[in-house]
Length: 344
Image (cartoon, rainbow, N blue to C red; front, side, top):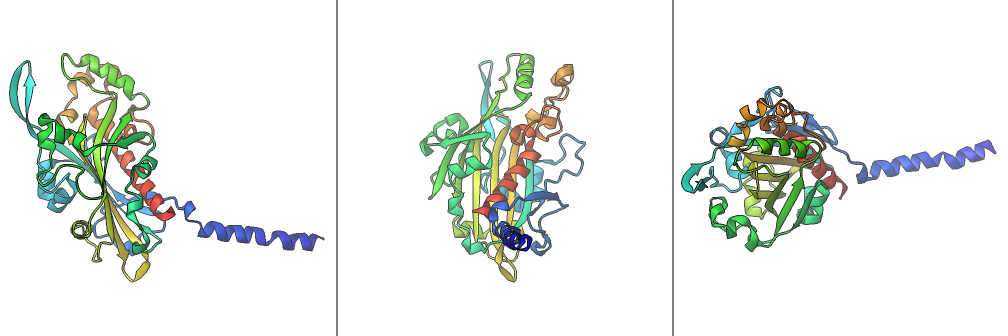
């Protein structure tokens, strides 16, 4: 009897183990910090591992990992051209009216750039990026951010003359073929709304800080001619099999732009695997980062310095989305995308 029962049960764990090993649903990618992603041999990346860097050489410094936009362009011209909203993008110049007086203003930016590389155990030509260039998919990447369709005619830079500095020089936003136009909103979480209320009491007549971030973006799979240029970024000597981007061209506060970009290429000598190089870039208003003195004199707000909050170094940070700080948000967004590519 015992031998008969053992014989019937023995295959169960073996079959279960085989089924689990074959199931892509178990893919759970984890980030591993590396000094640099560019030039990293895909063959050295372990399974389910995301090689990640955001150049935060000194995490104790609130602004570590941020670089002035102009310096970024000089240091990494290919990144500036391909990870900005468009290749000709420059820091904004516009007219601002203060107390009834119109004054020209130049707005300096600082840039956060996260780079990642991982392997998907599927052939590059078997991954259909069009399945991921949809609002339902973007909503799955971070459920805390709510998305809805946006008419291209309602894109703020298109319809608002005061936002003309954010227009593309070559075409209106969201009017490229096969583009999804998106309106998004994220309500700040945890203690941040309370911190914003307290900070707004210090703003004497100045524009108040909103308790949410709203932004507009276009989501698309890049056509082959545009995707082919991305080898300048990845530095991998293999044809680009596909590329997808979410290009944030308008934000209500704090940021001026953002971009998520994923580039797919076949692994050399292994057509059954794909190397994915992913980027997240965010252009931050420099004057936001300079708000220090008014916060430092209020004890409860001393840990609400914008640079600390944005870079995830504040006790006000919470959760896994934007309120956690840009580094955590970037890691989680890229990891969610990696899991989706492996599972779908």
